[in-house]
Image (cartoon, rainbow over all chains, first blue to last red; front, side):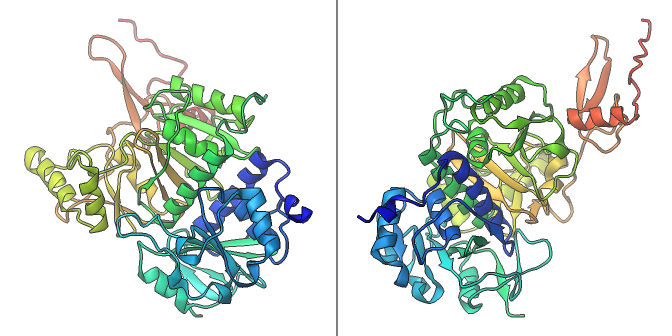
Length: 189
Length: 292
């Protein structure tokens, strides 16, 4: 194992994870809002925001799937050392990390059961950039409307149509983090 | 000062991660009860173990915590939970609604409107709204899956048939975003309209029953009713005897054994702030003791 894998975790886990969780909660509860998350320094190509989400929510009880360019030894070692999460295929994943294209097709992931819709995967999507313009968002957590630079619209519309089943998303770019739960209605502007 | 013998906010990190994941799924599926592995807490079930675990998972060092029990900041339950987090998380506390960032509540929503920067954590005894109608978890789960909520309307109809009106006065069921029927915890139905479209994040924790559910900000929560018996947010038809407020929820206090009574705001912070601002009710200080 490379020594790099041992670094880049939270310095003071209880407090830093608490602050990072509040950013995750705020992002998912208010789709379109972009939060800033600090504290994690994961190896490339994982963004600091995605790294903080992993450190905050992932542990030995939550299998993680690494998609595409994120499935490299440095990232595998870092996640294994800092979280203890088993690394698995898409079908068994509770969390998945990767670029949008690498995560496709989305129907590989668990979208919950009709009686247990919470047993669904959460996807952490690495974005080149994240801004408050683009697709129009409405639904729970949004007073009137919000806008977010989503990679596409159709996939999120299909996901919304399966409510209460469905996938939930975090979108990360650098230290910026946004959330998109399955309840959000997404439209092209 | 934080008691350094404890981890920040009492719970261990693995437990907090588990609760945090449940909270996020709750936010993603508004009104759906997410099972979670509730822990033993250093207080008995019924004293807010679910709320305490949700609060512990949400607190950050910079938070300012308020705890209310039936609207009051100064009751045993509220005081001890506030002290618990002062000691284990070292967070600041307050009794003022407007200053708090996290508010844990038992059976009330504060009168002062909440803001988008606040989290309201409810203590929930029975999270399943259908439980008294159908005791089997396997059946109620199926009913939620199939949106089979006819039984709840039959219950409300039986209220009308027996009493002439819907007599359910607290824990009045709501339908969230047209999908899940949810128990808002035993808040008076007077508070139900505040559930809907609230800018704050509302989280519900049931410790003994091991369920967490949530309402994200600006989520629709409609109280169940009938066209000819619309929902009514009722309260005692009386102003507060201390602060004179007309629109706040009131507690009735028996003052002697000859039928004497007074009505006071159940929200102690709301009442105190109004009195500090110069509002006065029928029995407000200077207390006019009637010689009898």
